[in-house]
Figure 1 (cartoon, rainbow, N blue to C red):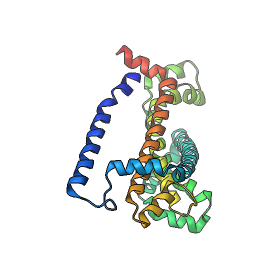
Figure 2 (figure 1 turned 90 degrees about the horizontal axis):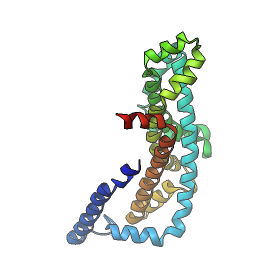
Figure 3 (figure 1 turned 180 degrees about the vertical axis):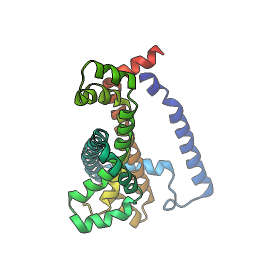
Figure 4 (figure 1 turned 45 degrees about the vertical axis):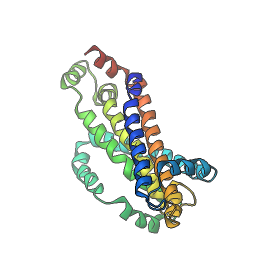
Length: 255
């Protein structure tokens, strides 16, 4: 894992080159700052406007984490139920796929009508965004458990519950963590979308106010911190996977 992090200098270098090209292109083409600000103006606004922005950032972090925990729990519980009860899986799984074809931005106003402007519609939005990747990843992980290991445990006298908790669930942890990584990044996006529903604070509110006043530099500041927050959540899940799925790492090292 440490070696992978050390290799991060390559994309960091590419990103730095893109910022340099962006800065030079804006200056040479004399593009107005309200249309496309240079990276230096964005960085300056991030530093000078931190006193006002950090409250919005804290609100989005809290909402993202809460929604991620709830969405992950719902997704994993759904996957377990669908896996253990085939009849439910055959009936519900196609509906879950159809639910992902409904744009969240279209569904959001309906949630406000049904549940008001409180916390509930925001949590529902994040949950809808987060639960599906975990459900699909966990189901795939359960199904990929080697049949020979199942037969061995059944011969040893294991019942269905023991088979799931002692074999299928541990074996599916790498797949579950893959779903968690995706959902962790989606949770930030879901939080920002949910804040457009009428929150008092948050990065979504900050972006709305900035775009309405043509403060493009502030919009880019919000985008920058959304990316940073998504990356940090991804790294946290990656770190948890590193310590909890050691057997998979040891197996890869032996190969």
